[in-house]
Length: 219
Image (cartoon, rainbow, N blue to C red; front, top):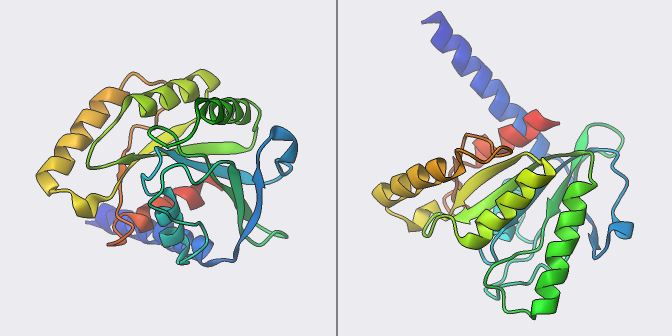
């Protein structure tokens, strides 16, 4: 019984730390189209990646409790650069949150898509303060080839990443459980993949407290 109480207390403290972090000021810093535009690596950094229209902007808005921190759009491929935000107090603890370019079925030219891939590869290779990349996967569809290509890039660059299944409110529980199992099997041999897969809904706010706690624990 005492262990259960201790576990519960730790979970509450973990959740509270995440809540406080994401209640702090969050400001847009810049959109970087090249490595020369990146801010100095002087704070912990986490990044969010995913196929176009997977719900990255919606998730970032929901996490921070803001409606327009990150723009949302039904048009795939709107995010075309590395968008940097700073969460917290610049004089004390805080972190960079990076919204990476969407990939996959975005309606963009092959040259632009190639440039995005090159920019992300160089970013991942040369960012020493990057603690984790959260790879968002549409819970209705599961992993696609483009997701696996990004995961292979992250494995190669030795950047820790964690899968987030989004839009759980649009999926039956039985189907989500199947997608979760298939995803767990798929990432089992990926060396840089975190074994715990998160399930979220920006609409229902499901899984957000856990994700906030995970991010706070990385700072």
